[in-house]
Image (cartoon, rainbow, N blue to C red; front, side, top):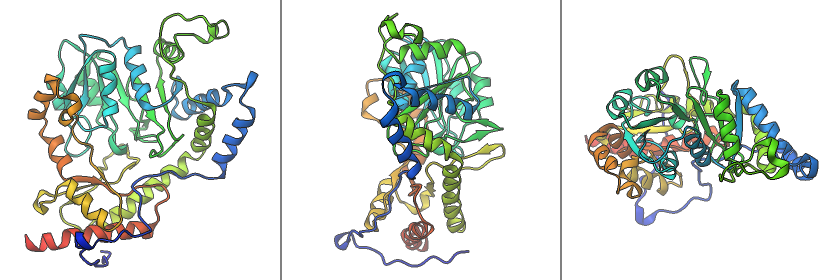
Length: 396
């Protein structure tokens, strides 16, 4: 066991912000990204316009081994395009897990469908197949799974329950993850990714839609460019009114450099998790991200679930870390708890039914997981957690 340093308890009235604040997320950028972006800035014009975007799409599809990849401004637009391509619309229901960022569910409302909120599994924090089975109805037009914090749900079980209902895999947080040898994002009918500045592979903002189905790929590519097909591009022929969901060349160039370093980025994420795992292994009542046979978890965000015996809410944990100049994030609140969905009866029903999502969100936080994090910073974060928990465990 690694003996933690004992940090002094901090009285909130006397808290002093340390200059070396530990960030909760952030990228790893090298000269290679700068070089790729500079080359695109100089060359991606006129007859070479958009060249970096096409290369990024080809290289991303090659990495995953998927039939097509379409670069878009963000994962929200990727999910929107996925639902449009599947013809989801008014009168339909789309099942989505409670524990995810609002962007997973918002596009359901963009197409006029109704979100149905399913509970999560207590170990994986991903979609519970038991809850999914209770949510499926004759109106279900799609199921959205979420690879939360780099984990992946039991997709074979999800597929068994969903039957012929199409599955959209929100792999925003799981680039490089695998389940039984298959990459995250390739396990449903359509996969979506985020390249937000907090993600393992970033373009600042940005996203990707991937699929092996040619019909869906063609539809997605048309819908993201004002309803035009590539063959009609020169003549400005618009087949239907659609959207401007294209990525810029500079973003794509940055993404290409990041993709070329993907193994290095993933190794660093695993290293950060293992530092935490080693230092917190003997702390009673603290569980970290789930490992299981056949799963390559990318540990996008190292997450601590604190036993209810400590009587510490997620908000209070964050406040205490903040006093020690350590940034944290809350476990994502259940979607049905958000005011944005208050008008949906499905949210009212879910709030009564989905006890696991509500329980875990109440007592869990994301620990600092920035790619530039050092081992010494992880030491400090773990020392703070020991300091927070020790007196409470001694009193219990």
